[in-house]
Image (cartoon, rainbow, N blue to C red; front, side, top):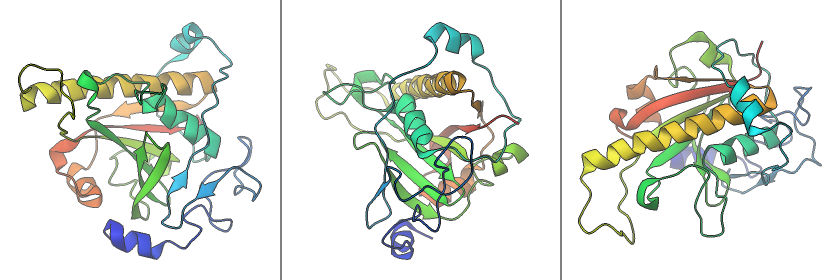
Length: 237
C-alpha cells in the first residue's frame, strides 16, 4: 500500500483515535490514551508529538554508566510522551535556528528516521516534531530478522537520503561517497542519543544491522542500500 492509499484508509482521527491507540497513558499500564491526554491529530493521520520533557532525572554520567544493548524486550507499550522524548533525543530540533540534537556535516541532515509501530510506519519530521504516516499495518517483520523485533513496541530504521545543501559553505561540491560517510557518522550520533535516553528512563534498546532491506525498502519507497541500521526500543523483560 502506498502513502496515498494509506492516507485514504486512515479515518479523520488517525491511527491514534480513542478506539485504536498505540501508546499507554501511564508508563505502568497498557491501556489506550484517554481523551484528556495531550494527543493532537491531523486529518491526514499525522501525529503531533508532545513537547519533549527536558527535566532529566539522572546525570549524563549515570546514563553513560547504564548504557547497554538489551535484546530481552517486552511488548509493553511506551507512552506518547516517551515516544516524543525518544525521537527528540535522537534528532530533534534543540535551537531556534533549526539545528538538532545530533550533528550533521554542513547542516545537511541526510538521515531520516522511520518509526515502525504495530499500527504502521511513520517518518519523523524533526522540524515540526511530528510523525507523518507512510504505510498502514504491522511491518516489524520486515524491519528486522530477530524475534524480539517482532514484539517490541518501537523500532527505528535509519535511512540515508542524499540531499543537496541549500547554502553550502564548501568551496567545491562534496563527493557523494564522502557524504555517505558523513551520514554514517550522523547515524552513530543518533543511535547513541537513543541509547542514553533509554538508559536514563530504564528502557531497553539495541542497535542492529539485520533488516530486510528489500522488503522494508519497498514499504517506504527507498532503495535497499539506503537503509543503514535499525534500533529496537521497549521495556526490558
